[in-house]
Image (tube, rainbow, N blue to C red; front, side, top):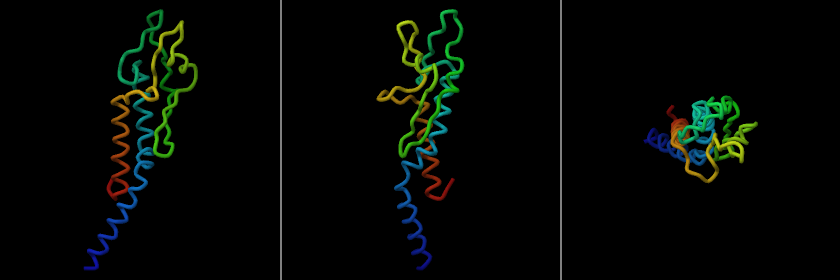
Length: 132
Protein backbone atom coordinates (compact mmCIF):
# COMPACT_ATOMS: atom_id res chain seq x y z
CA UNK A 1 0.00 0.00 0.00
CA UNK A 2 2.95 2.34 0.60
CA UNK A 3 3.82 2.34 -3.12
CA UNK A 4 0.27 3.36 -4.01
CA UNK A 5 0.40 6.16 -1.43
CA UNK A 6 3.70 7.38 -2.84
CA UNK A 7 2.35 7.28 -6.37
CA UNK A 8 -0.74 9.23 -5.35
CA UNK A 9 1.37 11.79 -3.48
CA UNK A 10 3.65 12.20 -6.51
CA UNK A 11 0.63 12.62 -8.82
CA UNK A 12 -0.90 15.22 -6.50
CA UNK A 13 2.40 17.15 -6.52
CA UNK A 14 2.38 17.16 -10.33
CA UNK A 15 -1.20 18.43 -10.36
CA UNK A 16 -0.29 21.22 -7.93
CA UNK A 17 2.59 22.08 -10.24
CA UNK A 18 0.08 22.84 -12.98
CA UNK A 19 -0.60 26.15 -11.23
CA UNK A 20 2.37 27.45 -13.20
CA UNK A 21 1.19 25.98 -16.51
CA UNK A 22 0.15 29.27 -18.12
CA UNK A 23 3.49 30.97 -17.40
CA UNK A 24 5.45 27.88 -18.43
CA UNK A 25 3.41 27.60 -21.62
CA UNK A 26 4.18 31.23 -22.45
CA UNK A 27 7.91 30.59 -21.97
CA UNK A 28 7.78 27.53 -24.22
CA UNK A 29 5.63 29.29 -26.82
CA UNK A 30 7.56 32.57 -27.12
CA UNK A 31 10.31 31.30 -29.45
CA UNK A 32 7.75 29.34 -31.48
CA UNK A 33 5.52 32.41 -31.82
CA UNK A 34 8.53 34.50 -32.81
CA UNK A 35 9.45 32.03 -35.54
CA UNK A 36 5.84 31.87 -36.80
CA UNK A 37 5.66 35.67 -36.99
CA UNK A 38 9.04 35.88 -38.68
CA UNK A 39 8.04 33.21 -41.20
CA UNK A 40 5.08 35.22 -42.47
CA UNK A 41 7.22 38.37 -42.61
CA UNK A 42 9.89 36.51 -44.60
CA UNK A 43 7.15 35.31 -46.94
CA UNK A 44 5.98 38.90 -47.50
CA UNK A 45 2.54 38.32 -46.04
CA UNK A 46 0.36 39.51 -43.21
CA UNK A 47 0.16 37.20 -40.18
CA UNK A 48 -2.88 35.47 -41.72
CA UNK A 49 -1.11 34.90 -45.06
CA UNK A 50 -2.44 37.75 -47.21
CA UNK A 51 0.36 38.99 -49.52
CA UNK A 52 1.64 42.52 -48.94
CA UNK A 53 1.30 45.10 -51.68
CA UNK A 54 4.47 45.21 -53.80
CA UNK A 55 6.68 48.29 -53.85
CA UNK A 56 5.98 50.91 -56.52
CA UNK A 57 8.82 49.51 -58.62
CA UNK A 58 7.28 46.04 -58.33
CA UNK A 59 9.92 44.77 -55.93
CA UNK A 60 9.37 43.00 -52.65
CA UNK A 61 8.56 45.26 -49.71
CA UNK A 62 10.10 45.03 -46.23
CA UNK A 63 12.73 42.43 -47.09
CA UNK A 64 14.27 42.64 -43.60
CA UNK A 65 11.09 42.94 -41.53
CA UNK A 66 11.48 39.43 -40.06
CA UNK A 67 14.73 40.53 -38.40
CA UNK A 68 12.79 43.18 -36.47
CA UNK A 69 10.19 40.82 -34.96
CA UNK A 70 10.69 39.48 -31.44
CA UNK A 71 8.45 37.61 -29.04
CA UNK A 72 8.92 37.33 -25.28
CA UNK A 73 7.02 35.69 -22.47
CA UNK A 74 5.74 38.21 -19.94
CA UNK A 75 4.14 36.16 -17.20
CA UNK A 76 1.31 34.27 -18.86
CA UNK A 77 1.36 36.34 -22.06
CA UNK A 78 3.50 36.16 -25.19
CA UNK A 79 4.18 39.66 -26.48
CA UNK A 80 5.19 40.14 -30.13
CA UNK A 81 7.08 43.34 -30.89
CA UNK A 82 8.08 44.96 -34.18
CA UNK A 83 10.85 47.57 -34.15
CA UNK A 84 12.55 49.86 -36.61
CA UNK A 85 11.27 51.51 -39.75
CA UNK A 86 9.01 48.54 -40.40
CA UNK A 87 6.63 49.86 -37.74
CA UNK A 88 5.69 52.74 -40.05
CA UNK A 89 4.91 50.31 -42.87
CA UNK A 90 3.02 48.03 -40.49
CA UNK A 91 0.66 50.89 -39.67
CA UNK A 92 0.64 52.46 -43.14
CA UNK A 93 0.68 56.13 -44.05
CA UNK A 94 -0.96 58.36 -46.62
CA UNK A 95 1.96 57.65 -48.94
CA UNK A 96 2.72 54.03 -48.07
CA UNK A 97 0.22 51.18 -48.00
CA UNK A 98 -0.26 49.25 -44.80
CA UNK A 99 1.80 46.06 -44.75
CA UNK A 100 0.86 44.29 -41.55
CA UNK A 101 3.84 42.41 -40.08
CA UNK A 102 2.58 41.23 -36.67
CA UNK A 103 -0.96 40.59 -35.42
CA UNK A 104 -2.88 43.65 -34.28
CA UNK A 105 -3.85 43.89 -30.63
CA UNK A 106 -7.43 42.78 -30.16
CA UNK A 107 -7.68 41.19 -33.58
CA UNK A 108 -8.11 37.56 -34.45
CA UNK A 109 -5.10 35.41 -33.67
CA UNK A 110 -3.70 34.01 -36.92
CA UNK A 111 -3.53 30.22 -37.29
CA UNK A 112 0.31 30.00 -37.28
CA UNK A 113 0.41 31.84 -33.94
CA UNK A 114 -2.37 29.65 -32.52
CA UNK A 115 -0.41 26.55 -33.53
CA UNK A 116 2.76 27.93 -31.91
CA UNK A 117 0.97 28.70 -28.64
CA UNK A 118 -0.72 25.28 -28.62
CA UNK A 119 2.63 23.56 -29.12
CA UNK A 120 4.19 25.64 -26.33
CA UNK A 121 1.34 24.65 -24.02
CA UNK A 122 1.70 20.99 -25.00
CA UNK A 123 5.43 21.05 -24.25
CA UNK A 124 4.96 22.82 -20.92
CA UNK A 125 2.24 20.38 -19.86
CA UNK A 126 4.36 17.37 -20.81
CA UNK A 127 7.34 18.75 -18.90
CA UNK A 128 5.33 19.59 -15.79
CA UNK A 129 3.68 16.18 -15.80
CA UNK A 130 6.99 14.39 -16.13
CA UNK A 131 7.00 13.49 -19.79
CA UNK A 132 8.71 15.20 -22.68
